[in-house]
Every structure is written in structure tokens, then in C-alpha cells.
Image (cartoon, rainbow over all chains, first blue to last red; front, top):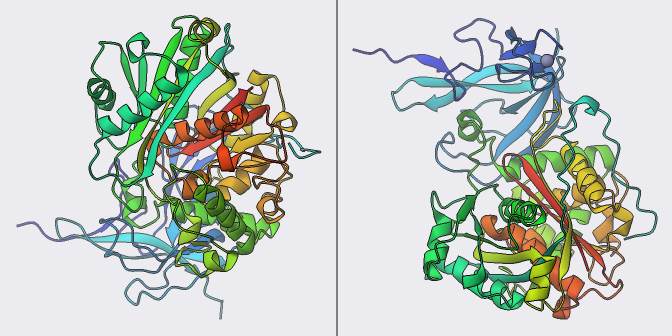
Length: 149
Length: 401
Ligand SMILES: [Zn+2]
């Protein structure tokens, strides 16, 4: 009997996009040992100096909104339940890498909270939905940084 | 071109990675004929038929019999396999080589570039480039993006172009009204184009555009190109072919370049330097600069395409792209008409044939045969046709009278 699991969203090569399960999950990128370029998701060859000297690196969990928009039209199937409107964004991390992301504060409520360019955000992991095997798939999202007490 | 065209912005970040120069062609290459099948929805026509009609119109325009064509380049994004032979069979197969090519919305322009290289280097004297598309309504599938982006709803072109537009608004103060002016211009031009998908919409005002349904902020439905069915074809040939067939008004392909992805960390959909690098290549190939261009077709699937295209190809300062339609500069009666056929936005985006449509409009304008769409404020001698497609890929051709 196979047990249903909670798993991370993966890239097309099957590699998870972030460390999971984890108390402090982080996106998994790659850094070039030759020129220092950081990319997400990870890849095997550097897009700047073209060497094969990429090594896996865990990325910062805080960044700034680089751009964002609100979509009112549900895309094709495979999108999580087609709930609209929803927000799309790119977040800039200090490593100089952009992360394509949703910025829902909470997937379950479906509330959209458009985040203007420059908003300081932090990563969180939320439920995306179930895959065909019944596993719960988690995805990354970014939301406004909590102010320190 | 508007006086004081500033030229292509400097490429600052990629000095070591600029692609090799565009090919030099030992012989001149000409557009001999163009032909379009109407853009829209055609439940009663398959790919082969759409391509056949467009091909025959282009062959008739060129005065070249089908049986004289030695090679065909056929383009599509959505047909799976062997689409070109379907066109050839529907025209009565002649046994010629059929090259199937796919480069998303750049497909026909990429095929025309390859055909121009084949003719320019002397291998052939004639070629037929034909594109067509059958496709479902709605979003264009983003087959170039990973599954996680699609399943998270992040991999849609409107969503990504919208983020580019938001960034442009943030950096330069481009307004939603300026975007609406681009749509108003497109609807006006499209209404005068007998093959346009949206040719029967009547007059559209800025308010109509702003009041139409929001799709993805800041784009309303009137600012987004429809996915269209249809077809387009271009016959190109050498100087000898032009003479042999007595082509009335040959149009020289002075430059044609296709380019694909490079990496820049701050790319949202395509890297900021991609278009300016391609523009530099094609201007160099044609031996001209943006100040010599009189009219242009620029990818305007959404307003950000036309706005950034104007800036990146050197027709206005960075940040001024949004003002060009608002000020009337890019209208048919302006000093630098752009997308006189309605562009992607109202002529339609018939992916596999879009490049042919862009080139055809430049040809009609240079020949003075654009009818009610003929530009009135310039006597066009040089035109530019630009496309941008998934992958990401871009293509630019420069045509000369
Ligand atoms: Zn490197």
C-alpha cells in the first residue's frame, strides 16, 4: 500500500524546487563556481560563462517584488483549480536572480493582495493541490515580510 | 523615420556574449509576391487549404507558376508534423523539397530568412514560404515553459507581458491611456484591412478600450491579440528570377535576422538586450540605421510589444514608446506609421502565418498598394518587419523599394 505524501513542486527533470519537508524551506538554485552567476531553478551549465561548474545552492528567503500583475482569466487545465483572479509576480532576491511566483497570502481563501513593485516579501510554502497519485503538492509563494515585534 | 531617431540603445551587459554577426549574402534577394488568406475562424478549412489559398495568391502576385517553385518552406506552431507536405499535396504535389519550420510567432519570418540565405548564397533562384495555422481559441499554449510554471498559472504570455508592462510603467511612467491609444490605432487600421480578424468592430475609442473586460492588469481584452486561423505566403527570388518573371515592383530584402534566447538575470519574458542585439545585426546587414526606416510592423500582441519595440529598435528614446501612438506619430497619417494593417492586435496572431502578414503589409506599403491604409505623410522607401515569439525568439527583416 502506498502512502500519500506531501511533496514539493518539481521542475521538468523531477528535481524539487525547494527543500521539503523542512522547518525552514529554501528555494534550490545553482551558482556558477567560475563566474558566480546564480540561477533558479538549478541547471547544469552556466548561462553567462557556459562552463559546467554549477553547484547547488539554497537561495535567500527574502526579497523584493520586481514586477507583478493580477490575472482575471484562468489558464488551461493543470492550473490549480482555475481559481481567478490570481496574482503573478517575479521576486528579486539579493543573489540577483528573479523567481517567478504567486503572491497569494493564502491559497485557501483565494484573496488576492496585489503587491506593488518594491514590496519586501518573504517566501512561504503553501498547498498547490493534489497530483494524479493523490499526493499533496506544495508550491512556493511570497508574501509581505512580517514586521519585527 | 521621425527626425532625431536616437538609434539602438547600447548593449552594456553582454559585451562578451554578443552572437556572431548576421550572414552576408553574396547575391541580392527580392520579395516577388505576397498573398494572405483572411485571418479569423475557418471551421470549413484545414491547414492544407489555408496554405494553398495563401500560396496561390502569392504565386499569382509574383507571376510565378507553382510548377516552377524548386523549394517550399512551410511554417506552423500547432500542427504536429508534416504540415508542409499537406499544403504541397493540396496544391497538386510536385515532388519538391518541403522544409517544415517552427519558430512560434516568428515562424514565417524565420523561414523567409532561411530561404533568403539559400537564394542569396546561390543555391536556389526561387522559394515559396508559406505559413498557416489552425488553433483553438484562448491562451496560446506555452510549450516553451516548464510544467511548474504552467501549473502554478505563471506561464501565460499575457501574464508575463503584463509584468513587463508593469515594470515599464514603474520605470518610465507609461500610462494605461497610452496603451489604449495603441489599441485605438490598431482597431482603426484593422477595420481598413480586408484580411483582418477584427475588421468589423466599428470605431473603438480610448474609453471603449479602458472599459472592456480586464484580462491581466493593465491589459483589457481590447489590448490583446486574438489567436487567429488563416494563412500567408511570400515568394522570394534572385535578381535573375525577378527579371525572368517580369516582376513589376520587386522589393529587396536588405536584411533579415532571426535570433534566440540569451540569458540576463532580470528577464521577465525575454532578456532586455535581445531585441537591441538583433536590431544592431539587421541594421548592419542592411547597411542602414533606424533613421532610414520609414514604416514598421512591430509585434504588438499586447501594447508592451509595440512600446518596447519602438524603443529597442532605436525609433525613440527609452521610455518614450508609449507616447508614439498617443501623439499620432505611429498612425497611418503620422511621421512614422507602425502596424498599418492592425498588427497582431486586430489583424490577428495566426502564429504560423504572422511573419508573412507582417512582411506582406510592408510590401504593400512600399509598392503604394495598401489602399485605404496607404500611409499619407511619408513616401516609404524602407520598411521594417519585426516579430517576436515563444522560445524566446525574435526576427527582423528590412525591406527596400
Ligand atoms: Zn559562469
